[in-house]
Image (cartoon, rainbow, N blue to C red; front, side, top):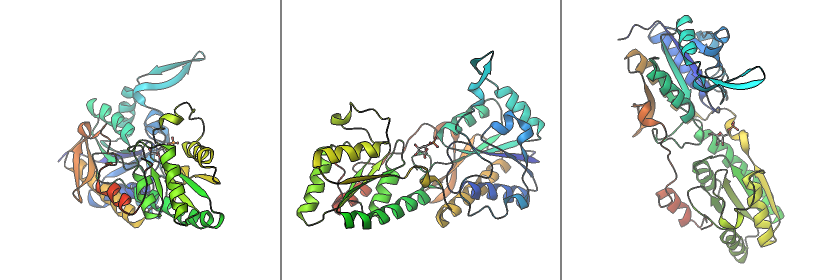
Length: 354
Ligand code: F6P
């Protein structure tokens, strides 16, 4: 067992509902099970670049944070200490300040670090691990697109938020006989779109994994009308690849608006667009996400106690296990276009615009 007296904890990258549940679980496990001290590092690695911002986290500090969205530590998706941007004589310079970060962590008394983040944060973690920092990772993204883990916390909450929005759009779409386009998150994968689309009874779901055409989308709208359904709900993942007929368009406006405009132009229907955006990242985590986040937090501290550094916790076959960060990063989990979820959606008449 390694000689640990104090651990640090940081949250990096986009926030996700459940981050506070992980923080709480880490602090409680470290203090109650192992008798360690915990230092909260604010805003990703910023609290190690500017160590005066870091401070001890006690049981009192994590009391009441379980149901809260966001992260009490704050987060950032900038500030990679290996490529740190600063300004010298009015010019931007990029420096490697990782050595300073390692020194600051040691000075704060941190023997090992729990770093919670997505793929980008895990890459930085790996670089630190290779430099000798003792750390473990906790995977995080609402997009649920990490291969290493079956599910990430925050995903279920985001799906629930998006489903609620689709439910609400149904009634107004039906009343006004409109096509309603809903853009949901999913930079590279269509997990939120397909799960919220199926859960919310959408009629068309557009995801990055399945090429589509606007003609096919409009055909589906027309077919529904033939059966007396004068409204259509289209769920669009933000990461869709534009079809050839839209390739000339710039992506300066949300992709949902582009799809809405294209449907309106081709079908001459009344179309409205809702871009859900960061609403999906907020709010109180669902019970499932709270439990998963708590399991991840406890398991991360247990990894440190066993001296299993350079690993990250994950959900595998329903159990919490771990994987080497080096093997876990860079592997994206996409929706399988021929998988059971897509086949289920198709079976109940949902179109993917293909
Ligand atoms: O990766 C999670 C995610 O929510 C993506 O779905 C989205 O594209 C991105 O973060 C948005 O990040 P930002 O907070 O930088 O706008």
